Amino acid sequence: MKPTKQIELATTFEQRLFNRPRKNMTLPDIVIITLTIFAESAGEPIVGKMGVGQLITTRAEQRNLTPAKVCLEYKQFSCWNRGYEAVCDDYRSGKFVENPIDAEAFDLCLQVARMVVAGELRGSKWNHFYNPDKCTPSWAKDLQDTVQIGNHVFGRL
Image (cartoon, rainbow, N blue to C red):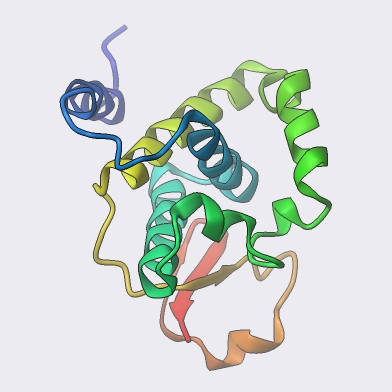
């Protein structure tokens, strides 16, 4: 079976990634970013996963924080609301990759997280997103420059 264009691009990216500095990111940071992207967008198309990655990058730039610290900020990503240790326990137990669909989604999220670390995802004006099928936060009415990607609405405040 011929690999999809997304996988071909990821392979090319992998080759480029190992030839550049990691910008002081450690494996735990990569795991935190990957888990965030996965928990927020596992069922979304690759562009939805990249949208979450861009949003993390945008927030990191705006707040002068590392992407991992942005992911762990209080009430920024719902996947961390139940606590750091709970999410880490799920990761260590293999809960995120129990079936092949999740394993494939997790791999794509890892690739997007590596793009975040390498500075490959820039230029997003979005700093907020939500899934209108699950909730409509009070700030949603104030979002500007909105776009729908998959089940998520992205925009900026």
